[in-house]
Every structure is written in structure tokens, then in C-alpha cells.
Image (tube, rainbow over all chains, first blue to last red):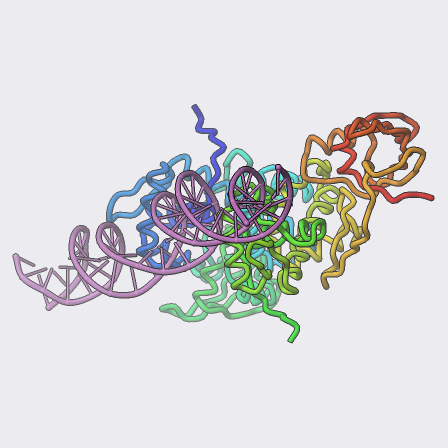
Length: 225
Length: 225
DNA sequence: AAGCTAAGTTAGGTTGGCCTAAATCATATG
DNA sequence: CATATGATTTAGGCCAACCTAACTTAGCTT
């Protein structure tokens, strides 16, 4: 029994599972308030939903100590991540969308698209493996590249690297990163950093620029030795 | 004031308006039970929703005498029709879907797609003007070809015509029509018809076939004189 | 004109998913 | 170790959209 139930879940449930997956990757277990702030709803509402998710066997909940996805919950979360990222990739490659406009569209479509549509979209653009912001696309079978990356904020002076991924959830930030050339594939060299969260200077494609620590934290690189 | 409100409507509301539009085209006013059967819900539920639609100014309701769309209601309905048909056309032309598989996918996507996405899809396939089943696609501005068509069931013996449109809401019927060659563009000649709803014999692309009256009622033609 | 039937509506209930306000728990700190 | 603080849960509501059962209306038919 591989739990192949073709159960359908509501859009809110799918959204909860997706953010729980992301928080869990970063922090081990997903806390109520973290989920609430990511979904922009009240913490009390999360408590209620968490009970329903636990009843359905999608999460394990230890009272007052956050939730973790069950295998089934993770399966659903990865399917949503796959959908979201395939849609983003398709919109940019096949329909001419800019990379800062695809997130919201994908956020709605991911709940309506069938697995078949996702597979066809993926095939139509040559199964790129990553979305327009460099995030890995899980396979149909739920495999995903979970390599840990280093953010620009963690880079030491004189270290060089290649931008692999940027955070996709803020359109204006994406536009700014695009202007700076901080896009997946770009080579960067850390020049220097002010102490205690000050600005960071770097060289990006032969130009120099300075960015704040918050922005630096939403760009991840692969360090070249 | 052109009623440009960018209001959002729920998926159920959009579905109600769409079927009310279609029933109204055929019967003048949309009766509660007609709406209920098209949406596969109980008539009592329709009464409840109709009140809400009337409160929002989307329909005019005369108690015990059905509903009609207001201008705003018609605007929303035509936008949904446009979305549905552009999506169907896009799925067949850009993603290789068969014409009998697009309806359900479109039924879900039409509530999630932005106007911009619909416009881009339409442009990407060259703005065909009709969906894969021959139904006209409303323009962005809500213009639609509302020509009255003649169904095969109404054709007289020896009359000839060209198939313009077929009903899209049943996949198995579509597959059968496809096998017979009764697809938009096909030339047909009525041979003879049994009286009182008996089978109808016709010639379709040099072959002869007989179909029942119910099937004949879901194929519309343009009569050649 | 009475009465029958089908169509439509009302009444009352359920569920999911959200809310605010009021407890309760965990934990760090004085 | 007592307590303040922040995180979490409970209690109690609300709303959209559905349901069934019971009632009302419209529109014949006889």
C-alpha cells in the first residue's frame, strides 16, 4: 500500500501543506505563528486547520510544539511545489511572461491544473528542471533536489560563486534583482561587507553594486572554490 | 460610469452566471430547476443563490418566474465563456489535447486564470475565434457571435450544410462524433429521417451514417442553399 | 371553479474556513 | 523560583454554499 489515494484536497489545505513543507525545510518543525504569517491569517485559524490536517493524516501535531508533514502530507506538498514551478516555468518560456509576474498567476493555477496538464506543460518547454527563479522542480514521483545553498549574505569577502536561485515571492524585489543582474547563472564575487548587517558590495558581471543584507539573504549561490 | 468594478466573484457565482447565460439564450429566462439540473445541485440551493446574485445586482429575479442577467451579470458570464473557450482552444492547439478532454480542464482553469493569461493564450494560437467544438469566443470587450444555428435534427431531407458547432459537455459523445466525422467544417447532406424522433441518415464526407435524434440535436450546421 | 401537479421557496441544518477575545502553556529572566 | 511574555489553543461567531423536508404558488385540466 503506497497510499496512492487520488484524494482531492481544497485549495486552503494545499496552501497549508506547501508552506508547512517550506518552513519545515528551514526550521525542522512548523510553528503556528510561522504558518499564520506566511498565509496572512490569524494564528487561531491555523490551530483549527491544523487539527483538520492531523485528522486527515496529513500532518503530525504535537500540541504547543508545531507540526510536521506525514509522508502523505509531504507527497501533496511536493505535488503543489511541482505544479507551482512548472507553471512558472511554462508562463515565462511559452507565453512570454516576465519572471516577476508569474508567481501570483501560478499561485491560483496550481490548484486548478490537472497532473496531466502539468506534465504536458513541462514537456512542452523541455523539462528544464528549475523554475525561472532557480528553484528545483520536483519530479512526477516527488523527487526533488534538496541541496543546501549558501546565501549571498553568508559569503566571505573574495569568495566567488554562481547565482543558483532567488526568492520569488516579491515582484518588486525580483525586478530590482533583475536590474542588478542577480539572476540564476550570474557569476558574483563578494568584495566586502560592513559589519552587523550593513550593506554588502559585490561584483556582478563586471559591474559593482551594493545591496542590503535582507536582499542578500534572498539570493543563493553555489560557491566556486 | 461603465461598471468597471474589478470585483471578484467566487467560482460558484461564476458558474451560475455562465449557465444562466446559456439557458437565457435558449429559453428567454432561466428557471430554477434548469439552473439546478445544469449545475447538478438541488433546486432549493439555487433559490438561495439566486437571492444572493440578485442582491449583488447580477440578475433580476421575478419570484416564481425565473431570472435574467443584468448587464453586469452578462458581462461576467461572457468573460467566463471567453475564458472557457480560449482555454479549450489553447489546450488543443498548443498542448496537444484531444477535443474530448479539454472541457473538464477548462472548467477548473477558467476560475483561476487572469485576463492577461487568457489574452496571451489567445494570441499564442492566433486568435482563432472559435473553440475546438466550434463555439464562438467572445472578445475581450464582450462581443460574441450570437447567430442562430440549425441543428441536424431540424434539417430536411436533401438539404446540405456544413457543421459549425457541436455540444462539448460530454466526452464520450464527442469521441463518437469525431469517429463519424461530424466535426466543425465537415459537409453533411441529410438523406432521410424516420418520423417521430427516429434515426436520421446522413452523408458525411462520402460515407453514410445514421444517428439518433438526441445526437443530431447536439450538432449545429450552416445550411447551404 | 376546484383541485392537482410541477415548480419554486422557506425553514432549518451542515461543513469548511475564517475571525476576535479570552484562556492556557512554555520558557526565559530577575 | 516566581513571574512576565509570547506562543498556542479554546470558545464562540460569521459567512458562503450546499443539503433535505415541508410548504406555497402557478398554471393547467376537468
